[in-house]
Length: 220
View (cartoon, rainbow, N blue to C red):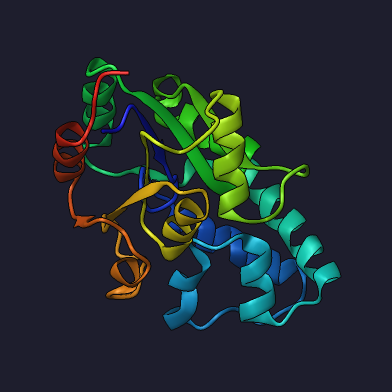
């Protein structure tokens, strides 16, 4: 039975594709690199951005750092406002908090960016903890999840559920012994990816997500 719920951000609580695609394109322009083919754009969302710059653009570690700085430059001023909340999420968060559950964000996005997005969408205060990537963490979802656990004083993952839309969420949760619920709100994951990485099930709406969590939870 779960008492604490961790949420991924991009693709789970929000559809951030517009802002991410525009900021990634801005970074490529600044790096004098060609734009990505449209058919691979969805691959940006989910993994750490450094990985995407290296894998999709062939950048060296040094160029990945430069491109990431350009990305964040635009994201902090424009991209964080080019985000849409997934339908039903505000109501879902309100319901889960009313049920006595602790809620947290665990995202590979830069932590400052997480705060900016959640504040812009008016759901920042729904969470007991907001953990994102920062300079003190390894660039993995496992590291972010462990950071959120530490901030909440959790010594182990029993009673904690990770909710996410990509294999990175499932793998990060598995690495710490945490269950994972898959969501398919925005369609960023290839078909079958979540199931192949061991999520308990995949839900398709915020209401389905809420019903699943409440059915498997206990009051904190």
